[in-house]
Length: 260
Length: 343
Image (cartoon, each protein chain N blue to C red):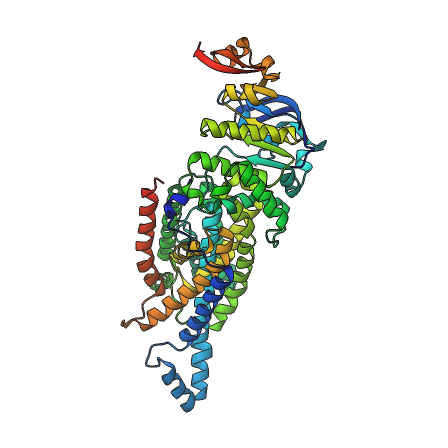
């Protein structure tokens, strides 16, 4: 995967009608460690990643990608640079897994280009990464929810983007595949790719993320390492929960325990 | 999983693009030639025609060039238009029930043409009627996209089509009521039933450039249709300007379907049946479905037009009636399959 994406979000506000989904959010993000975007339902997580992917107009503030305003990027250059994994897992036609994943190469191919050797290699790497190589000839309609989630992630990775914005990539996956996907995304991030994942699972966020950004009611409530963000007072305020911390060697993870 | 479930997984029937398009092209050519030599009024097969040629070469020329040829070429181009626009609308809206007739685009085209034809809008220019059809389709398609392109349930869009069909029918009835000519009602009703009979080369010359513009615009959406299988956000993130794609699809449908309907009346369900039948053969890829549906629509229309001339009825069966008779059960079948798959 290529590296070098750098997002700079300043005072970003996004509204849906009269409702403000994001209210003056500022953050900076670059590759090197896995970034988790967490927060309760309706906190603005999906809105933030969609705005960063250039899919939402915003009323106030700015987003820069590699020091260039996002809106100044051509759509094809932005598509090569930023891979976006939508929360929706609807695929509308029963194409094969391999064809679906190959859609990720669209930004790299001219309208009349066939699939090159380079494209095939990238597709194969993405299929292997998501552990779906054995499904390549299956119609996507025949996959389980977890298999489909991994195939859709492979579609994003096939584009070899410098930044991956993944909206809930592990929801619906079994524990084994959750760990496998997050281990892969963490390795990807450590190779220099900017990886931002929206997560609901605080245990996984505390275990895998190098940095977590906690959104609450459209604002950033806390931003830092899991150890500094996922602290009792903050969790009580934002989620209304009490959590326990479990340790395994040098690593620690937060386990939501009871509702306050 | 949306539409996919409706198709099940009956194993791949995909064939190579060259073989499929080549086969369909040969079928279109064979049917087009057959269509030139099939007719009524005592002059039917090749033998009759050759006899006419021997006795009266001028009658033969008129019959072949001025009567049969326009009919054949209109059936070919209108069928191609309906097949192609059905494939584009289904890909764009990710809905296998989308097609110009069901979505009300065809009846809106008819309404536009009726208004222009019977009320002498645009000063009686020969292009006025097809352009009326174009305007009618444009309004209908734009309204549909505004209403239903984000609808998760495919039936929501169909309901929007039902509303548009009802509105177009009501306004056409109003036009009939107010039409200055007492014969207008009968003429309009017969014309709306859809037919290729009694059309001249002039009709074709008027309609063809508009249909051609429509085809180019419709084909220009092909690449985005594949990405749209993933939904609008994912397609936009792959670099497609969806607003521009939708405008091209609206204008493409407007020019192609508007001109087709204004020339031949409303011919239903071709845009539904053709893409549905051909989809497994292209591996369910929306982009590859476009040229196949263009040729498939032409073949189906030519075959249907040959049928209406061969079926022995006192008055020639209108082709729109035949396609409706075949298409309606097909539509019911698709609805049933979609409902069963939880749509």
